[in-house]
Amino acid sequence: MKGMRIALTRPVETSANWSGAIRKGGGYPLHFPLVEIRLLPVDRLVPDQAFLIIFTSVNAIRALMQDARMLNAIRHIPVVTVGSASCAAAKQAGFYTVHEAETKRAEGVFSWIEARFLHGRGERIVYPRGNLADDELANRLTAAGYQVVAPIFYETRALSAEGLLTAARRGRIDVVTFASGSAVTAFAAGWHTERMRVWLDGRLQFLSIGPQTSNVMRACNLRVDEQARAPDSASVVAALQRLALNKKDEAYRRHEDD
Image (cartoon, rainbow, N blue to C red):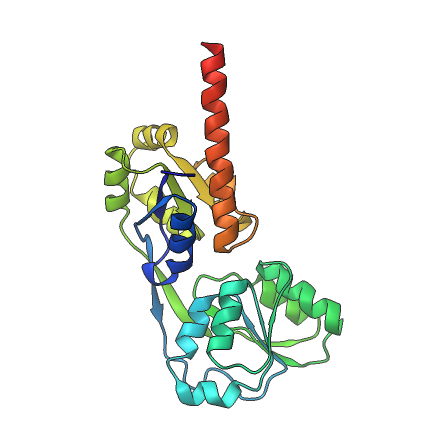
């Protein structure tokens, strides 16, 4: 991936790990955020007595850290997280007991809980999330016998893709990375015409953070050239390295055909 110009479409404030890992791998991270995160007030949204707190996003922890009084009242509640970034953020926030689910996606949290506690008996689980999060995890936990409290801690809003598209048209980007379906739809909204989509499709490579984002990409007629195997910076860099290797192999095959 040495020399690859890689567009990061997630918010700048949550891109530091990705940027650092890409630079270390020899790539050039370029920030073109397509979504912004607005943290919401969390006062009285979290009960101070619960069996477990689930964090699937660093943004939920960032929102909680706005309210020191609330945070102090719930630090004793055990936490399970998705991904190393959320795990590190929960520890930084001062939670006494923090576990990281083995599988770095939301379904990994359910598997973690199921493996240790089997079925619930009405225990309360707090699941702070964003306004665009789906209900799959909450529904599965409810069906397993838990009482789920799922307050909205942050809102995701789409931004214009014009800057990214302009840079792409000028040949300044090699790969576009997507960390959410919201970023994909914001990008797709900027195409304006099918002709532009086809033009971009032939000149860029596209990387997805995971299955849900890949599904949105396909629904928007975007090619998924590579998908990270986990939603963390190491897996993203590994996926970028696979992209670079595939591109090199394709160039070699074209040379052989000539």
